[in-house]
Image (cartoon, rainbow, N blue to C red):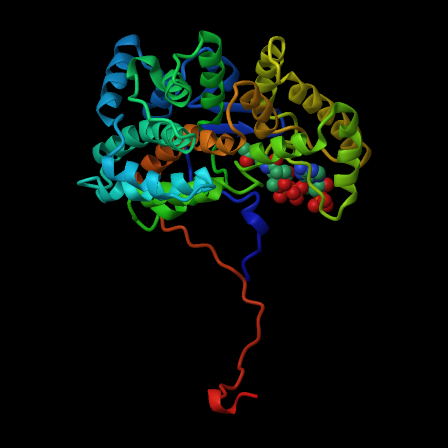
Length: 380
Ligand code: ACO
């Protein structure tokens, strides 16, 4: 029987997982069985441990885990040199993808896919990603990179390495929440890319570099930057409604930060980030972006309901105004998504390598057949 085409592989299972469960109709998300709303009480580091080990750590296990991360903090010198070679204006996602691949060259054992070696690589990438993004940012601002302060934890150290100041507890808490919300989301586009790359039994660095490239797209992680660029171009709250109407009037017009392949109700992560943004807006000089976002949500709700569509804000929508109010440059929004998601990608690589099936779907050939070959000298 002729196989059915599932455009975009929508609605198709390609593997089993125990990492993350999503109920798109009810707006529910679970990591290892824990509701994401409850996990906002935890730190991002606890969540990484949970994703990888299936259990929340005890204090002792968390201390040991944090100690295991410490030797991985320094960026290899040659990788730092790579950052210095990049031309001004380099997209930080291109930097991150190149650096992820290059880290393999400075690893004595990049190819082995046994659980211990994979875990070692995971520990390294979980600290290298934030360090790379922060170091890249400082270098392009003409500032010296900073030595990490591992005692600050993953979120706190990232903000410290970016800004040169130990973050306030409030800023650290906000980034911590953003990181844990972005850490994992089942078979999203980039995780699928990571798993299908790994299914050829290529090394974990190659699979992660591929995933970074996939995350960059504006229909996926790149949407958070697209949201902020749209808000910047709109400028003031009174122009939001017309922007939405103009965008929807275009053929296939998409308002960035809305809609989701899986969620048909509000993405629970979006709801959490909206509350975080509301709290930040109370004391932020950039609160205007949050108020514009609320107006955009209101107009989209009205317009989509009128069209009989369920299109709600997704994770990327409110993360844009949260990062803005944290003072983070716009082109680092998607790299921060990668900083968090690398832990989820690694969790999936552990599963994929442990029970590997080559991912090799079909693409239905609809082109011509039986064309006679004409030598080049006779082609007119
Ligand atoms: N703006 C306007 N209408 C939308 C939007 C949107 N952002 N998203 C969906 N719709 C509507 C359209 O009416 C569309 O129907 P149409 O194709 O007849 O115009 C219908 O919903 C179905 O949308 P699809 O794009 O077919 O849904 P799909 O599941 O393929 O795509 C996606 C989901 C890519 C997220 C889409 O909603 C989109 O492009 N959103 C904007 C980009 C974005 O925010 N991406 C981030 C996703 S979350 C993440 O990666 C963390």
